[in-house]
Length: 304
Image (cartoon, rainbow, N blue to C red; front, side):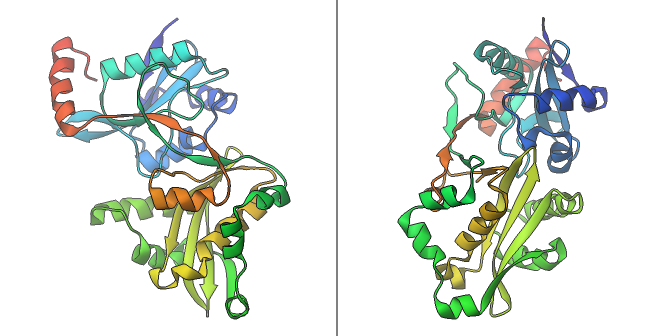
């Protein structure tokens, strides 16, 4: 009865996928394909017994040292097991903290923990008839979805290709620090699109794209992996129209995952759709803390 570590080439991906598929915490973000795309195969797993529970561990290498770091666009990982077990989750957490340098590692909203970690917000809408979901929208959200005649007659929602939307996303992407981040971000989008996991909805006004969303579908979930807006047209509420359209098309059979909610104005925007708050825990350490931990792990001979 123990936890073991398997490097990427040692993983039994059939057993890993079966464990995820039957887990109480099932998430698209822990699948092989998603982690291969976002972590570029730089991930390994911790396994309890014979794949009774698994914990994917993505990492980067800095100066030859392996550092656990959550990949771009991957919100939640953690422990996946048939029934969530706080004692088992704590065992995985202890193993992770005692054997790795951790910059950032998120658990998932189904993992119960006794340890006090930082909590982040996320919002979900569970499958239900669209009419019932729409009925719960806030009065403000419903008002914003009632477009005036001029906008209605000169606008439309279209599903577009990666190649069509790429220039718009690159021009309206905010929050990335450097050019290499942009390249990595776009590569994830491109690969996910060509593997048919990702699609793009665009809001056209006078034949020009003014809003777009990226939605990733897998494991009976639809995740909002990006919202992009031309600042000149924010008042037209194109982003609300696109999310409403995505819900209309998928919510009767899929969980809709808003993928965030910690930034106040984004939280307010998401709450207008009346989703459920589903917080999750995350381990985060500063670079200064990492240097201290490195020395400790090297002394114990536990650094992998």
